[in-house]
Image 1 (cartoon, rainbow, N blue to C red):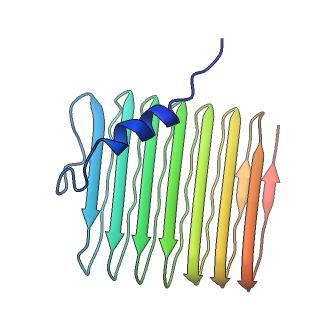
Image 2 (image 1 turned 90 degrees about the horizontal axis):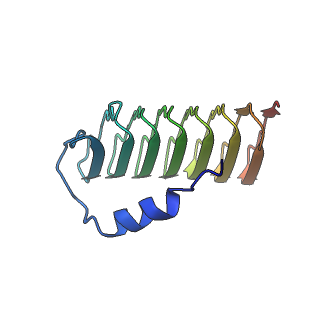
Length: 184
């Protein structure tokens, strides 16, 4: 049975949703949708997502003490996070059967963590400027990771399991370190 790739559909849906969609409402009906734009100085957000069939969230944090911590579940999970400004952190978990996570962290103490599960896992991570790190662990069948780290104290660590394993890592400038473990 051929699986349908929902990412283009989800991107089309989100192009129609204005930000900020809601101030801080992490749950909306059976199909979870959240669009959050946080421009405050002491950013923080915990977004659960619930266990519905489609969990969709776009988060934009600009300011000082950024933090996210997502957790989605259900069948289709899409999370887009953009953090700009000072103490970026992002911890996330997806699960489901189709997981897409796009994150960009710019400026200062970046971090990450990112865990997925399910069958179609996608992580696109870009970290720019200062003390990068990452983490990333995927399970499932068709796993894809793309990481770009630019400027200073890089590190990554990717662990994948499953069948269609693919990892692409680009590190530019200063303190690089990469570890990739893939299993089939």
